[in-house]
Length: 420
Image (cartoon, rainbow, N blue to C red):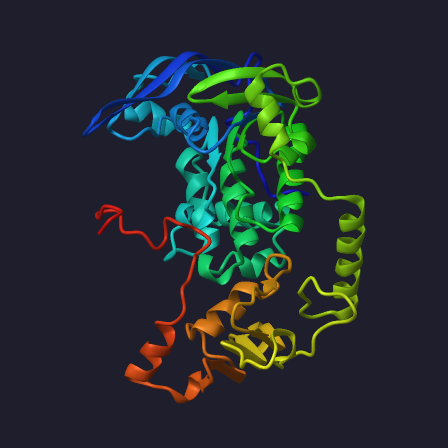
């Protein structure tokens, strides 16, 4: 028997989202910038509408406008109706009553949507109690049930975890659990799977699909991934330079695109040949049989020797991990994140480290950067044992490594301009 009680935000007859001639203009130092121009669309209960287009086309601006979350320098015109409430021009008190109950949003980067200092279970409980007067103990039980519902393993223990203790895919599942806690009539998903690996991406999309079917929730899916649109959406609206240029059932738009931009968008989708697909499938099967780390180098005739410089010639590796193990926690709660991992990167070489969410990819990268000390094993950077370097010598080693993080918002300072 589910611990989840009936929530107040179930969808009513009629569209769960109605936009009519919606416009959004941003006021900047150089003048006004129109981001959305006269957009009209509908999302019905239980329907998934995909909003697609290139970066900067206005997709996310529409999503934020529907939530009433536009920045202070934005001016919205026209109409945006959610749960019979006009969002454009609505006071903050009315919007606060809607968010989390009648409409919820799943953001692209879950790390920015979660409080790093609050345990997962408590964050979900707070969303529940913001809109329902129920005891804290009952809300906590619902939080655990929601974690189970979205596919989080061992939800009782995970409810006591902090966001940094979860993988990216697990954090996104937590955000979805928070979004569906009060069974909203409308769920807005802004690029919810962009930062996830393909296996977790499929699981998250399947979760959202089941939510729409089981509860009648309408889903506005913001994405640039046409494969996601084909597999997941019922209808699609194509955006270009702030306008809707084409809309219709997925099959019609993808198979018989009417607008030139839609045709160009579809033509830009990468395609694998049959031979490449077969080779990729064989490589995946081999990796599964190996059971640990598979380094796909694109070479034929057998794998390169692990932990050696053979694959990159006689030159010494610039980075090498040797028999690395990492264990988080102690006793029964200990988690082995890495187990005997060995790999190397030679000068001028690109090594692809692949695996499902939670498999240890990011942990291996953090070990290589010296951000996480290995439980056992050796990290060698530019010929030097990282564990034996201190102070200035270690800083010199790490200065030779450039890092591109998954979330571009994380390393940037909001108060500084790009040049600084």
